[in-house]
Image (tube, rainbow, N blue to C red; front, top):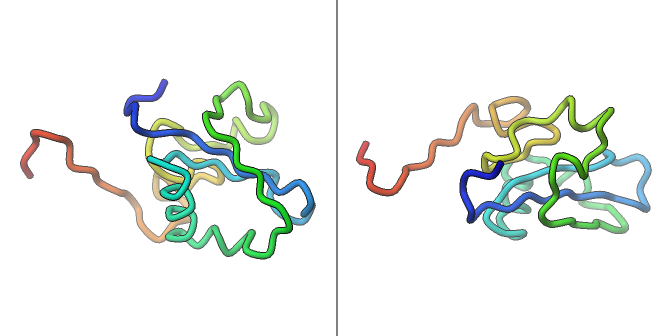
Length: 106
């Protein structure tokens, strides 16, 4: 279930580089936003020298490796990196990203 219709899921793989992770999952507003999130969290450095990066848009839970990836993901419906799980404070420099909702005043 995706709560914000403006968010899209992305799955990045590196078919020519077996030393890289099996994939990276991120939910963002666009592909450019996804790469910005990866850069912000230092994950883009992992695959900076990759010979090929394949980006799949609109990936769903059932599209992912059920034995290795699915048991280890964070929430896909939140903007952030969900595999490896950094969108809820694990492995990233920030513990949380707060978004102001329209009509709400803080």
